[in-house]
Length: 495
Image (cartoon, rainbow, N blue to C red; front, top):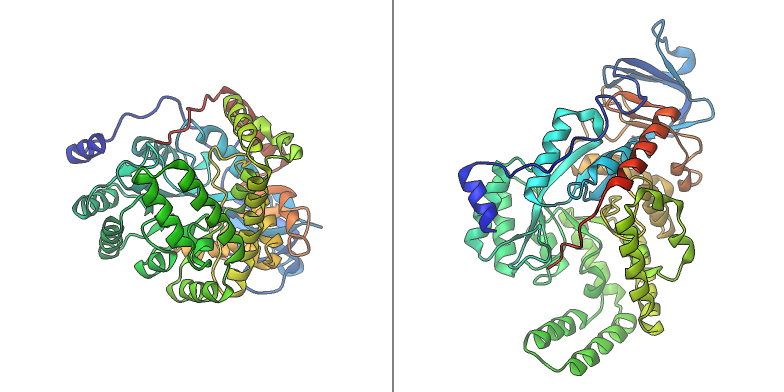
């Protein structure tokens, strides 16, 4: 914190990490922005209208010039075309929870995002210097990656849970940090798990005064209802939600923490943990949950469940996941860490493994319940170094998991397209396929409304008006594989 405070006081940025930006001025093999038409496609425009078969989308200078029936649309002579016959066009996808800005991840994450139709991401925090560096690189060369909405570093208690977090010790310090993050031009603030109540409240109050959103985890010092009431825009990973639906669970959890800090014997704490596990399975109260969800709706608190992360942590006995060919995009040192973590997890008692799997099933079902209650959802993956989470393609995994949780395909698509645009205040330019909007599109070889897994069947992508066709996608994927093989991840940065 002292190093960060000194840099902010001097008005200077930290030294940039070594290495250049991934890719060149145009995605490998992609077209430069100009005029291009997608013809003969079924357009799923996400405006609420029915799919439009046999339509043409004309793109000029990075924007959608028109959308109309093939027979009624005149394409300027010499315009390059993308064959949309038998194909479906949706708005570009968003991953609303990623960590791309450390360990050189951007060099292979950014190409993977584009190749899989993820034309926008929400960066959820890293070291201050790496955030500033990669933000400047993308501004210098926008075609190298997706659109990115930038978080501050994680604002946390002292010491922070992660070394790249900013440990804040008092409300006064919190206000100073919020002012500094806004001055540095971050789009929003990321709040984290160790924030004391008074520090969290100071962040929330100062953020409202300055008009800068804040989002993130629900700190252990508060409840999800308190986070919603404070104006937290989104809750990540369902943090704190399931325990809030179990009468007595939060109180027992807090007692365990106090006992641990007081040096109570380990066997006593373990007994409390066993009681907490039983309570989690036996004490769920749908009525308590319903009240919580209505508060989310009334406060406009969005949820980013990141079900794909929970799946990766509980499926340690699933050998198919460990044979996933996408491991080619994971640095070897990180893959080895996944294996070691899986071995440690598998060595736990079978009863605990079964509990974790059951809790994941319940949290997944809870997402469907929240959706039916009107709570807004966003697709996010926590692409970073989480086990079995892959940049780009895990957005498709998350969408399938949301469908398994009970969301209809149209709602899943909304959580990755029009929903992020609304959440970010960008509905005037993104999220739907309409004349005047930015040309951010995905051309699919299957109908996602018939089967959401068809989002995996990417034929072409349009990013910032540039068409990334099949050959260009292959080049991006090859680039990502090469850069991942060169990367050497650091050990976990957790305190």
